Length: 267
Image: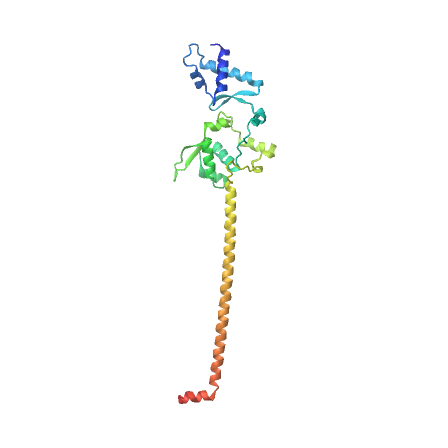
C-alpha cells in the first residue's frame, strides 16, 4: 500500500470517527489486509496530513486519547453559529476547584477547601465527575480516608491537551490577567447551567442572617431586662406605699386614749 493510499484511508477514518483515534487503534483497522501499512507508515502518513492541513481551516491535532481532525480555533466564532444552544458557562467556584485539582492532584476535598477558604459544594464535585473531568484516584491514609481527586483523559481531550505538562504555568496565568484585565476571573461571576449559587454567596448570607439573629436576640434581652426592672420598681413602690400607710394607721391608734383604755381593761 502506497503512502498516498494510507493517507487517504486515515483521513476518511478520522473524519468519520466520533472520538480521537490512537495509532494502535488505527493499526487495528488494517487487520486482515494483505498489503497493510506498518505503524511507522501510519505515523508518517499522519505527519504528512498535519503538514498538508497547515494552511486550511482545520487541523490534525494530537491529544491525550489520540488524533482527531478538528476546526481551528480561529474559526470557532463562525462555526459556533451552527448551533442555537449556548455554550456552558461555569461559576468561579467551579473553575477554581477544577484548577486546584489539575495543578495539585492528587488532592482531597478538605485540601481544596483549605486553599479556597470556603466549603466546596457537592454540586461542583458531582458536575465535574459527571463530565468525566475528575475521578477518584484513591483515598488518603488519614482518619476518615478522604477521596483523592485527579483529572482524567477526557479532561485533557476537552481542553485540547496531550499531557498535564501543557497546562500554562501560574506565572503565565498572572501575566495573562495583567495583559487582559477583562479576562480576570474576579471580573466575571457566571452562573452555571443549573442556576446554583456559589458557596461563598451562601456563606455570606448565613453569616449575615446569624448576625441579624444575634442582634435581634440582644435587643430582646435588653427589652426583657428593662421590663423586669420596671416591674421591680413598681412592686417596690407599691410595697413602700403599703408600709407607709400601715405605719400611719398604727400611729393614729396609739394616740387615741379610748384605744389605750380598751386595751388595758380588755373591753
